[in-house]
Length: 169
Image 1 (cartoon, rainbow, N blue to C red):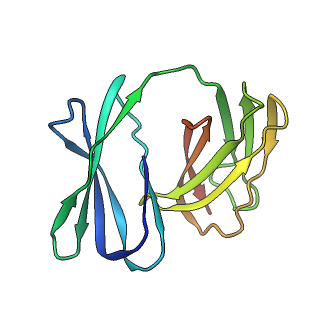
Image 2: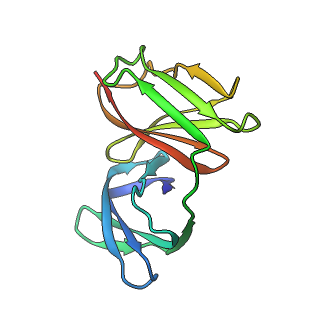
Image 3: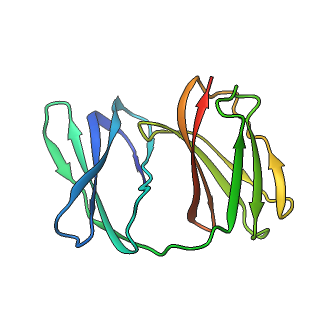
C-alpha cells in the first residue's frame, strides 16, 4: 500500500487498518508522519499476510493533538501466484556500495521497480531496473542511503513480487 501527502501540518502518524468484510477494521501497522512539511511525502506499508480474495484497507491519520481523520476504504483483490521474479540480495548487512541483487525473471518486456523504504514506511530510494537477461546481476546506486534498517520492494507489472529486509552498516 502506497500513499502520499502534498503537504503536512502536525501529522503525527497513520494507522493502517485492514478488514476482510469492509466493515470491521483492525490496525495492522502504524506509520510515522512527517510532522509539518510543505513538500510531498511518500509512504508505504506492505501487508505480509493478505488473505486470498478481497482485502479492505483504510488509513486513519492522527495529528499531534490526538484528533484523527478516517480516509476512504480501498478494496484490493489478492490472488496468490507463482513467483515470476526471484531475487537474491547480498551481502546483508551491507555497506551502501557493496549491495548486489541476483535477479531471475520470466518477463524481459517490463522494467522492475526497486523501492527502498525505512521502517516507518518512508520511501528513501527508487529506481527502474531494465532486465538484461532472464537471469542477471544488478548493483543499485545507494550513495545517499544512511545506516539503518530498510525494506526493499521489487515490483514488476504493477505487482509487488519481492520484499526483503536490508541492513546498511
